[in-house]
Image (cartoon, rainbow over all chains, first blue to last red; front, side, top):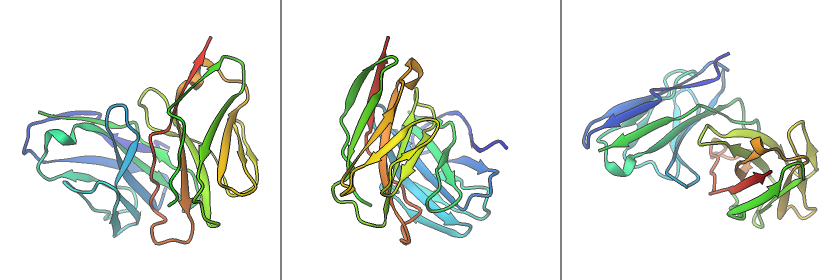
Length: 112
Length: 113
């Protein structure tokens, strides 16, 4: 069991570039989420999914797209990177509504 | 989801109990209280959760007041490795937004020798 795997671990982008942050889990969890964490701050919810084919917006969805074509994968797409999107991005998954969430180790993104 | 309020920071002596409070005065009857912690900017780690009864596991105890408006996470014998940011969150059940879990800024616990 690898748990929640995020790739890449580090990434530097130029303003205006696009990229996809990958998140995969091998625990057959229905619920998956993406968070961003700015320096010295808590986590803010970007997008989440309650199952394959179902996604919804969180607190800070602007500038990001998601899709959930399989239970295992929940990629996060940055459409046109901006310096304000410099952050650490965490993906999380959990089995059901009331079970604990498992987090990946994060992707550290810098936009210059 | 109900909003939570936590102190920004707390200190605790190594070997002593760490008591971390959380206020969730607007909690409704169908919301659970969850605690997570984050060490050194790693991914957050689940600690414990509860609805209205006190809960205990190998990591910690969770004490929820009778009116459920506040709770306390207790680390019975804090070690230096317990230094982390601790997040208290509430989550609704049977809700279309059940996939959401929103985190606040948490409490930075520093365990000192």
